[in-house]
Amino acid sequence: MISVPSITRRRSAGPGRPASGERDILAATRRLLSGGANFTELGVQQIATEAGVARSTFYAHFRDKVDLVMRLASDLVATSFSVASAWEPDEGVDRMAGAFQEVLGIYREHAGVVRAINEVAGYDATVRDFWNGRLGQFVDRTLAVLRVEQEAGRVAASVDLVSVARIIVIGGERAIVDQITAREPATDAAFARELAQTWWLGVYRRGPVESRTVR
Image 1: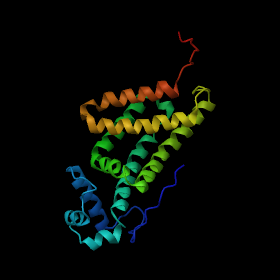
Image 2: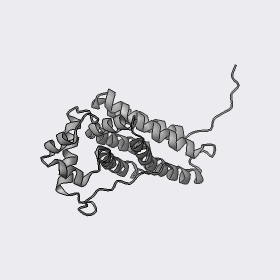
Image 3: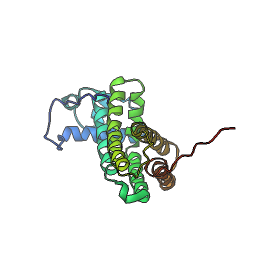
Image 4: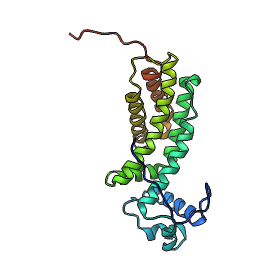
């Protein structure tokens, strides 16, 4: 697993209770990003002004903009992970499709943040490793579920669990980003259904593969 750098703020309002200034800065940044702002070009002063706080307040809660974007990303991952990890195989493919549609809704709600993460990860190794580490949570969860299913005989013994968990999670996340970026929300239900079928039939209930001679 990739080690994930910790996000240490200079001041804390207690677990789960961000200080008002911090909360205002996070909300202001989301608004700016939702309005089409480029995260790299956003200045700290612009963010502080939008939040209605002093520039010094920004630095009281965040080391820099990298710290800020990782905090925004953490909030996105925590919300989507709670939805995705709630699904269990005995709920079937239809419930999986429903979970994917919920995740799509979360990604659309935080589309500006998603864009910022991909933007900054393209040139900043800290953010890139951070995001890969966060996706690792989904890989670990999927791997754990698949191991139980394989031991119970419901996933084919031939499935390479580590490889397939990485393929469907990392590939699925890339597909979700593409969906919210390139297609309209009206297509999300069909996309979620097809993504669920891909996971279900390709991994969870994969049938035996017969050897064939290529001619």
